[in-house]
Image (cartoon, rainbow, N blue to C red; front, side):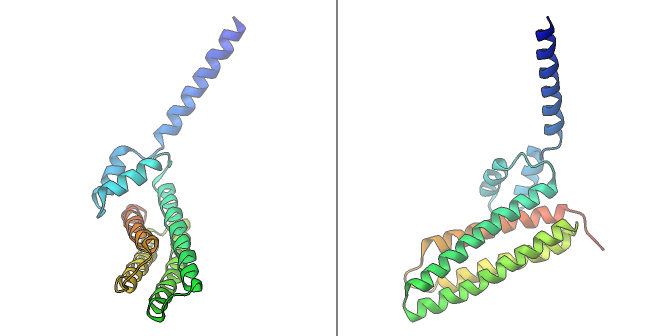
Length: 177
């Protein structure tokens, strides 16, 4: 009987924790609201559904910035590898320009994290917009090349989509005066 009471107490405690934890998670309605405002709703929903355990909109913003920065860092490393690997002068110039854009993108994302941490949704928005511009400019730089590394194009497009999600989220965050 004592073992049965312990099991019931354990199960009751577990259920309570699950209820409390789930009440703070981002809802599917909130995800839908966010994704309806992006350019690629399907990408957004897939991304947010994989991050649905985020306990708040601020946590979701951080998770989105983390994913964006990881992809930007990966792209920057790939660009450096291409440049170091030896490409024709015209391609090298385009990839170098792209590399410069990604250095700025990473810096802007670092600053976006700072704005998020200080509760400044507007400042985060400005820095994410700048990061998006960097990925977009990179795409412009490399699309004129005859042969373009597919990972650069795909990652840049992905970064633009992630930035779009982060921009929508930043508009849901408090504005600091």
